[in-house]
View: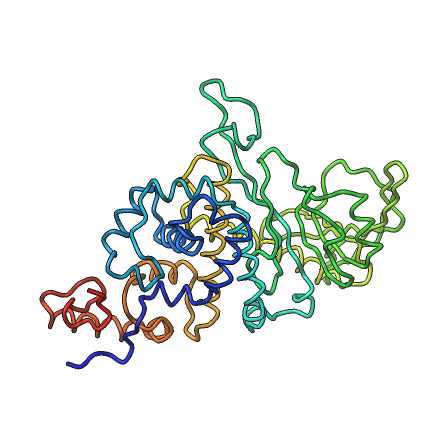
Length: 413
């Protein structure tokens, strides 16, 4: 039987890495002094190794080294000349500045954001392109020494630390456009920087971000916000109106209010509606006096997109165990996780076939080092897997990926 036309000159992982610009990455590493202390392990090699580990969900440096040793014959197709040792990866995670990985993420996002926002599945409302969502998630750590945790010290043992990942996403893109790290004890409101927004944009955020001075600044800039009310806020009611359903039940209550704190005076609307799913009243706060109530409610509900993003990342990539104990190593692993999430999102958006993110991530892990065409395989995986199995049955000495070592034209040996 002849070879499938779907077989490729690079393993799946190498093709996935083609979303990245190797020349730029090596330049970023040099500019961030990333080549100074780890010259034998370039920024590209470091990134490639870490992405491989994160996508494969490895929990330790030992697993990384052992798995890459098993794939040693294929590594040159990824731009790696040798199997990195545990000590090499550990040293690089401690020494290469995490700023290098941040620049890789931001460049990848800037280069491909058009593909993210052009996905028609996300174009459901006129305000979607203007909506940004802000929130944070906390990742627990083994120690309280690097990043201060929150809460009281436990009666037995030390309090665990935590790193807080502050994130902003464009609602029609679904991946972080801005990320900042702090200790878990840092209040979320620090991330709300009005000067980073443009006139006409809309911000959806949790009530942790309520700050009258910043909200007034957003209003002056022509930026709308939608958030949830906090209990105990003091304000003066300027107007109060009730809308009823045809059955005489409350549909929503709309109040125009003014908050006063020192010299700050801020006018806003409080919209209270009945959430039928949760069977309770929900009060939203916004500085937009023109938008329909239904749109305000829909905007706040869209805020859950960022919660789903955090859940997706934590479910599909390893953030329970870190490949180093320094603050630099921890930040590197989080940046690499965000890069992996972005790469798989770009792959997901490029395919006509509908994949859940978890399903796609699982399949990528299974075929990472197979020499098959990335795009054709994920459009019709059943057909390619069938051909792989047939070829494997015809080749008793078949190696990983379903091709025998002597018949594999991509075998470097």
